[in-house]
Length: 334
Ligand SMILES: Nc1ncnc2c1ncn2[C@@H]1O[C@H](COP(=O)(O)OP(=O)(O)OP(=O)(O)O)[C@@H](O)[C@H]1O
Ligand code: SF4
Ligand SMILES: [Mg+2]
Image (cartoon, rainbow, N blue to C red; front, top):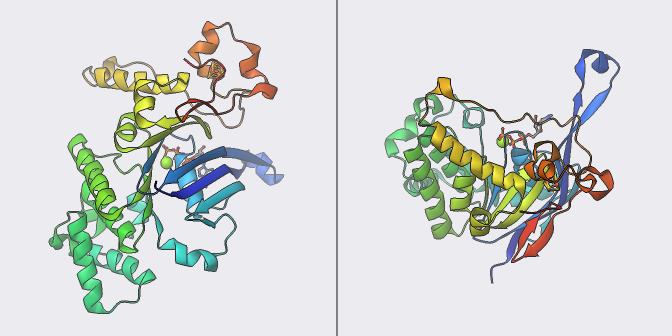
């Protein structure tokens, strides 16, 4: 049985933000509970998919797990080490084992560095190698991510979106990482290129025994690549289970919305832009509803005549197992 590579327990990340110019003058701050009590684990060689709408806290989870952003509270155990409060020096040997493929590669790749230098820098940061060894490793990485040698002299602006993703993946592999947070690795890519990136990540997982936290707002992609899927809403996981259960037997009303949005999106793609209607609600962290955060958008809540149990602060629905490792945070699962 494969061992647990990552365990996240009751993780919270609350950002502080000055609220408006007058509040700023009075040093008044507001808190954004971007991640608000998230727990899950990841087994070696497996993929956990994290899905949810924009702003629900996916990137924040990835960044806090890798300690790129400080944690507010909770516990992160990576490969048996409690990394939650480790100093930068203590973290250093573990850094080579856990890496991130960043959502915004335009910001993450230095525009003044050629691909050769990006990879070289990643290789020598964690390994003392001679020039010959660095060149050999660079070529090995190019092969692993199917990138032509001619791209070594390119700057990021000279690469296509798909090529940039491959450089991001190669950079994560360069340091020898076996746990990778892949943040929206397929976003802003054509469907055919998305499939290539997904297949590449899967092949690398098989060849190198990688474990992924795969972050995306696209439930279809997440469900395809993941062993387990966690659905997030406003900083919390509302449903979690094996990917095929989330695909075929989702129980949380929000997961149903995500699936129907996908169906709608596919049918809307056939409709001219001018004829499209409807928009996603905007997340508002400033005024969270008491009790279930999803209530303002929940069809089940409306259909049941707005039961108090859904919105009572004392009875906020908690994630509970409904069988077969399937967890749902809802008083009236579908
Ligand atoms: N450094 C920061 N300071 C203050 N607030 C932040 C910061 N980073 C993120 N946030 C806020 O935290 C919330 C979660 O952001 P996050 O980037 O984790 O969402 P996401 O799910 O990755 O969204 P997307 O799908 O658009 O990438 C948002 O409301 C965002 O505005
Ligand atoms: S707890 Fe109530 S409001 Fe929340 S998702 Fe379930 S039915 Fe909807
Ligand atoms: Mg994000």
